[in-house]
Length: 345
Image 1 (tube, rainbow, N blue to C red):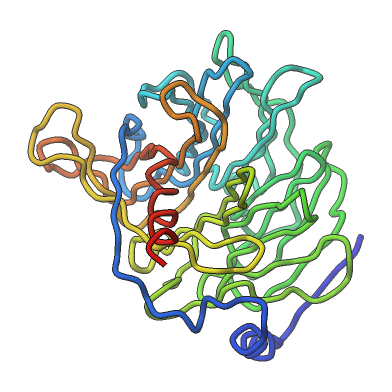
Image 2 (image 1 turned 90 degrees about the horizontal axis):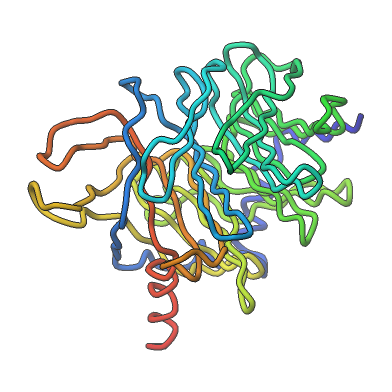
């Protein structure tokens, strides 16, 4: 096991990030806030209060789309692209979830951080018929499993004390341990460059080089106007000409897209209501988002993929408070925000 501890280095790295050549974001002025809308939303989770948390998007080779979402009061739920609940599993207080397609079994393999059992749950999701089953669990030496992200080889899971560990999918490990100064949650693995991005909620987004023992670099720090603490969901969108890191800026209920290579701020936006009152098909906006997920899969009607976000304050079509849920956004609407801006430059 490798343990990498980075104590009391935040000020040094923050200064480096703000004055060095890599992340240019901190010097940028906050943009005028733009907004887009969701075209669909999932059914509310069955539990009230702060229950929904983290989504993951599964797209089959035929384009069938299934959205997994955690209900951190009881387990995991599966929805179709129209937001209808397809299946669920009551396995405990699962906080975060992530996964990949297992070509050998022709199923999706998911992992979840279970705060009830202090374990990682490994699930197998079939798509015909749609079903989710618990395939494996393994114990964690963490006080409370919290954030989680995966690669096809490893599961990365953190706690509320700043510790992030990597584990093999069979439960062996920890393979490596990374220690930050304060609470982390959102994370995403860049398998192309062997990097791990970790959101330290009130500090910023760190980039960890998984192929070396070098200390992490502060990709983007928290600020009052751009990435507002606390940092929540993270995910990476890849296209032929650009790779984008998307983050949930929970402190001001917005989302930020950065160029993954340069840390350039591409856009900052909110998700606004798509209609007023009881308009048929209207979807309310989002606030206080925890987890997010993206896919670049070519889906019928959505050729560039999707963004899915948790909504911390869901309301129904009449404007009444409802249990939390997940909103579904066409990625073209996100991309248009920064491509339009580039055209104007």
